[in-house]
Image 1 (cartoon, helix red, strand yellow):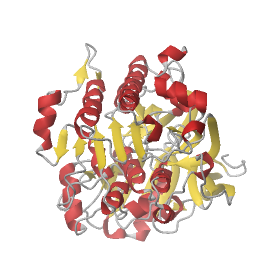
Image 2 (cartoon, one colour):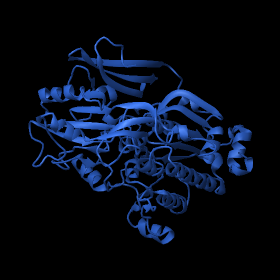
Image 3 (cartoon, one colour):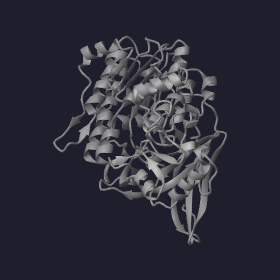
Image 4 (cartoon, one colour):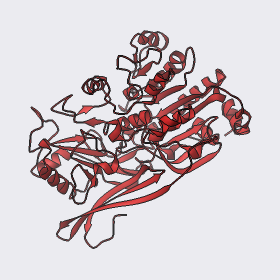
Length: 531
């Protein structure tokens, strides 16, 4: 890569290592750019020249993780709050919330669902306050722009006390609503999803529109202390065509182009020397090896299983909720005996990976093991089976996927596969070290505490579930006190000489947990552990 192709400010970062700026008192801005679904193994000089250059001038977090389930809404909340799922209250993209809909699951990205959930929770469905809310309380502005509705999780702007000085753009809409006329006048209508002759779509135009909304409208007067830009690609293209496909690689390049626009705007404004840029993805990605219908499978085994509980979920019924690489089972009446029967049956299925349960059950982990024990969590939760096998595009990592709307060869996530549970984080700026590949585990829960530390709020940072990424900071940060690796196992005798055996690999730094991968298998009782 020629230096002439790298933005000027990155050349200076590489040349000076920020040393020249270390003693200059400046205001600080932090800009977070989310590439939805970006796998770290696709970061390269060829695929992502701007991101690659940023990594050379900053820190590449080589063991970065989403929280589990590795899905968008769960990790949108983790990025926004620095909280584990049980503490944020969001544990799936789709959940059964009887107070919102007593018959079927709801999508937690839906603004109407968010509004109703807030009403039921007396104004604040997220059980942990967001970074944006904290900064507003300190009198600091924020700017949030997302090509997807998940951007609403970054700032609970549907609340009546949301500050108009800190606007939100989400999937073409805006808060305050009067901002929408300015967006339409400057940018035109929010683009429809483009589809090619083969019927395959992308959201590249939506990402470009949303990037412009941040740079031209939300940043019109100034760049606030905290900004978030959430891009929809490469998630959408990977769902449609699988990781590593031609369309997915084009979508990755489009996200890199939008990052380049952000960096160029910071340079144009003359504030790049006082700005930390963090590029993160919400989760990794896998290729679908097999699609199946968990509800139909459960019903065929004689259970009263359904996707829609007409008239409400009654005792004896099991509501099955798909989250792609994870399945939720809600048992009517919270019947422990029925829950145990469901868990025992799941352990006989070839699609099962890791089984979690609300009640103690043989061969399962508790919901609390993965920080999933929210009040409205399902009774049984199953991460689906996965393999390291490569797909037709050459991308490693394939999973079973619940729901027949996606087919083998397409992409999905939300499992405990190694490719779902490792995502991207690269950070550069005056507060980060230069040219470092950080080998310590990190996660999306660590962004908020690290940003709070950078902006001068160490006590607030310490109150989050995540940790400050002190080893990556150029200045003082919290010291490394502990590091541990754990291999958790659970086993159940299935009879006839067979056992169910599952594992979960957990890393722990300074008491903060990171889930590396987990899987399970039925096998002869005398064989070795799964992993």
